[in-house]
Image 1 (spheres, rainbow, N blue to C red):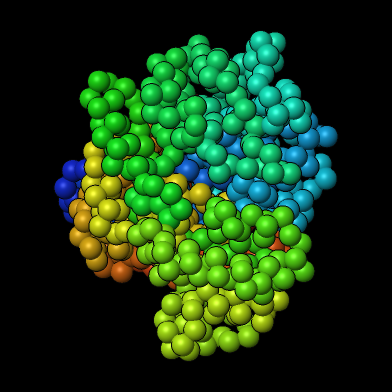
Image 2 (cartoon, rainbow, N blue to C red):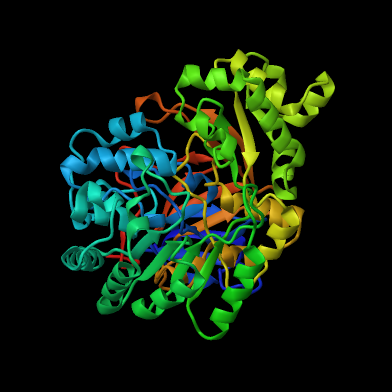
Length: 562
């Protein structure tokens, strides 16, 4: 046989941005060996008439660091055509971690990434099986994965490993910085893609403490960036925050001698002044001078689901502070209090435009006491009943024991502004947050949403440009050296999809995490076939490789499979 697998008759969109063309793809030994014309026989043939054949999608902003320990399939990313992911973003992760620090890591992930403590404890088990970052990579590689995985060294676990609980209280001294740099070098030598860090003020961890990376001095960050430079390859991912804004990012890029990809350039912010146009202008100026700074953008609104028993997204409003400190009974008393309701109604009625827009888009996502209200806007129902939206929401919450769920966008909900961001040069698609906030949002369906809504329906992007944004662009910035393009000799990570039907399905809540924890999922439409390293992983929305057997994904040490 000439090929292990041959794909025939599809429209090849190779990830470079070039126009698609009709042709075949020949695959052997996990690599593309023929492109356009693939004469000869194959053990397996996939017909792709009327379909697009393109590189597997690359998701550079995930938080599968813990989930990968119990879910080798990394669901739901492959459902939507993702064949390679990067985890460890925003400075979070599970390695290195001392045994007596595991609870701190779990509690940090619970608070800052919305992960279920029950799922984390049940899924990770009592013996994590690793302590250092190199050990962690070894365990991932030994366990196997459905899709390819690259990992960043998170700054927060690095600080906790060296400094213990004091990592969330103070800056590091010279000795501690030296030890962190040595551990960073070990991680890079073992195959880390680079360093991830964060100074975002909203990143609050266990016991209400700032996450450890927020306490890092600029000297410490530059020390770790120096480790990247000394290694000779790698990059840095960072979240903007006080003390680490675009000017500081430029200094970090110079110290590391590498790209810095920052999170996130978002259109509109419900709870604060949006500075995205200023950030975009500044980034353009830096890129024009040759600075390797790449902002991440997303086509999805940041929709968060919440319950009034844990209304995290509303706690940014000052009058919600007593709610954050109250127990269940205390919260109920506050929600019944006329003064609290009056303050909430006033904010709703006099909110600045972006917050008013977000309030107006608030939807009831789950309501066991009145199921007919689900997926309807709070404002519409309130108008029908002649009550204020605040009173409606609080009354529904109280009637259900605070179990009613609401969904509300906190950023990126102005589609005209999002469209403007998506067409900017020098941006990178990211921020799916796959693996995090599982019960609050689901943006692991980002790729199919981009192709269905922004290419086919809104025609903001050409098909070729969208595929490039999903494949070659992120792979290049994060150093995935043989992924993201269809080219002879490159890894055979391939997605075959129907451009007429590809889309992200509606969100659905399931309870399939360890410990019975719930999460939101989205089914994909129009994704016919997902191929990883030459092996067909999915056909017609189902896995064709058993989750308990050998899997085709590879650990991408230094951005490349060994």
